[in-house]
Amino acid sequence: MTGLPLRQLLMSLGEPLVELQAAPAGLDVPVRHVSILDPEDPPTAAPGELVLAIGARGRAALPALRAAGRARAAAVAVKLDGPGQADALREAATEAGVALLSVRRETRWEHLDSLARTLLSGAEDPEGTVGPGAPATGDLFSLAQTVAVLTGGIVSIEDTSSRVLAYSRTSETDEVDDLRRLSILGRQGPEPYLAKLREWGVFSHLRGSEGAIEIAAHPELGIRRRLAIAIRSGAQPLGTIWVQEGSAPLAGTAEQALIGAARVAAGQLVRRRRELSADTRLTQTLLTGLLEGSTGPQSLATHLGLDLRRPATVLAYAPAATDGRDAELSRDEVTGLISVHTAARHRGALLAPVDSRVYVLLPELPPGLPPATLREWTRETVDAARGHLSIPLRAAIGPTVPGLADVPASRAQADRILDAMGRGGVVPDVAALQDVQAEVLVSEVLALLQDRPELRDPRLTALTAYDARHHTRLAESVLAYLDALGEVRTAADALHIHPNTLRYRVRRAERLTGLDLSQPQQRLLAMLQLRLPD
Image 1 (cartoon, rainbow, N blue to C red):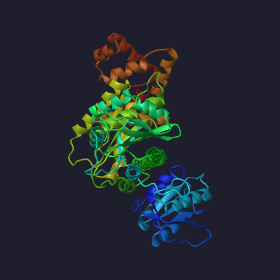
Image 2: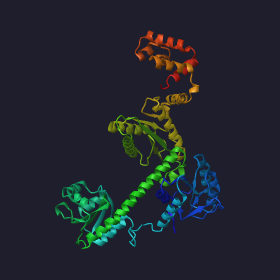
Image 3: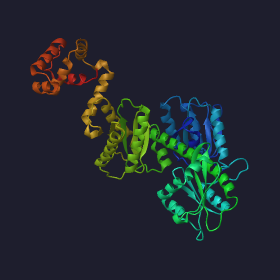
């Protein structure tokens, strides 16, 4: 048995069951067997095994990891009692050279064992079969070539957007018409021809027919006779198989061959969608783990073929509250917009929506990329969200770090900026830390005061409480006075009151509380504490 690559096993099992913690030898390590390591047994393993270390939670699994590394096993699966245990196990797995999988606490070991064994037994038939005793289906290009042989025609397989997915080989003697040639060259049917097909009702007939339909030849348009059949999974359309007639008529059994081919293609396209979905989930899991610092950079780098030592940056976006709009819909719209704009600027950009924020990892940046370029890219996205979706978006630019290992630090700094923006401490809607260093630090000090009431001056607390009870504005006036460095007229203008009114309010605040605003320490504390939200 050749085994199933660890990557494929993870995509098939999925995040609901297991989560990758470390993969020091990469994700293409073949998994050949599943073994159960009972806590009463001595730790042993065999080459290529997935070892299920049942009953050995947390650090108790260290002997199993070391034994698996010595035996060149593929991976060890364990359950964790808490997040703090993962670090020691990841370090041991990396040292042993064996992959580490954490199993969800609620997952039953026998269920995981059964699934893994089923997947590994299926790896012996990697091409898959269509029903009992049916031949291996191969890929879509192999299918197109098989249909060409059976029908005597020239075949292409397209998706629901008329994009060419696969096509049969042609020889010098095949008479290929313009529609076929332009479709293959452009990877999509040319619009003038597609418009004609719509006009003739071809697509509507395909949607309503279970069998093949015929499209007559139109020599004046350079279109030869064709047969076509829709590819479906139940009622869901997946694409179309087209067979163009060449110099010889199509075989008499062509329609029957197309019916079988459409069923085979449906299975392949459904499987392809599942694989793409599983691959996307794995990428998201690895990316989120890297951003949070719970998964090392090697796993994502191996999965996507990234260079660990190239510069990288994290951008973080947070949509502001949108009145009257569905929050989930707005988040989906914003995520889609960010992905499109970012991909237009950086081919390898990766997105990870986490709670209400969307993080963008820009890996493998060119050395010396000007910060102004990143700012321009981010500004375009924010402006597009406002212009096209009417959604105000805040964006933070994390520092460019020397490699993927430092990505968590870039994300952390971007989060600091967004946190300050959310607390109203930063005015720009696009910023890097060097733009708003003071504002971010003040915002973090205010957050500390907010969480630690014992650090506040009770006299200032009493002042804000007095305002709340008597509907006065003494605290606001004191803060404006201090912000204006004691310039009474400037502060009064900011509050739209007479200077004498401001002087009265400041003196009254001092008398009520015992504050002495001539003291620098009291002024400093007042400037901070009076900025706290009510």
